[in-house]
Image 1 (tube, rainbow, N blue to C red):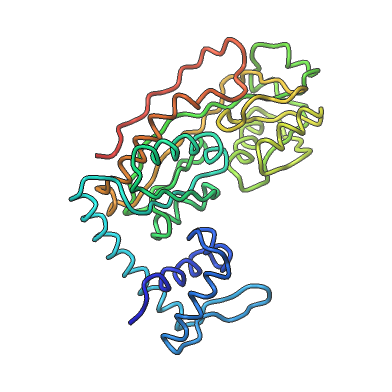
Image 2 (image 1 turned 90 degrees about the horizontal axis):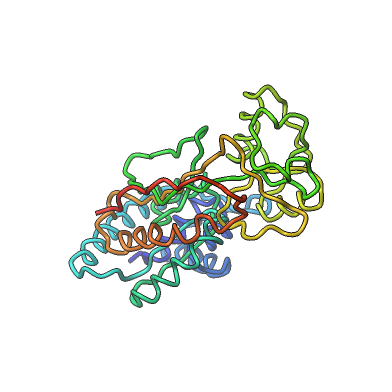
Length: 321
């Protein structure tokens, strides 16, 4: 008889494309995933993984078995959802994927709250880029994702998934302390020409927003430095190397040498929780979404908020029923 946990490991490798990626998603060590696959190979008397350079690739037999694993895991999820719904209490394991600033600025308080209120619920967090997390939920690898979108890139809504708005994360222009903008209450987009920019790499929504916005205003952006993490962007700005558009969530207090200035009109990214429709009745999902929305107001404006900012957060939509 095939072991479900070993099939889950194989399916995770098929989704993530590597043993390391599967291990991170499942909360295992890479050696633990390799051991699960090796045992599955002995059970099936089939070679499932082949070495390709420094990585691995699934054999034809493994791809077929991974498809079967996806179907079996969906059946198990439906059964677990029904049982948990009947008991009426959040319990069991819930895997959550969140982008970096949400994992840093929002999830710690949410996870601590859930652990205190629901000892039988085992929530496991993985930091994942938002453009990947939605697909992980759709494929059944992760139970719930915290993702975001911007006005230029609406959040995709794959078939078979539901979502709830958590809240709006406002972004500010961060400049060096000696910059001419530092003494201003607000800066308009039409004022941004001729600046050296620090931003995330191409392909990230923040980068695409900056390029499109400046080109619409008639400027070709001079991107001097690129980094993945907002904290790195802020450090580069504080060193006088450029200016940056930085979301408030997860950024925290600015270091000496950096000043936040309101940008008008200011960019806003919206945070969402997403889950599969088949798991919508699960109390663990409902309670986690409730906690995300409940804790949002306390963290929404803890970042480098400019003085006398008149912005008012938009109310979030209804939680899943």
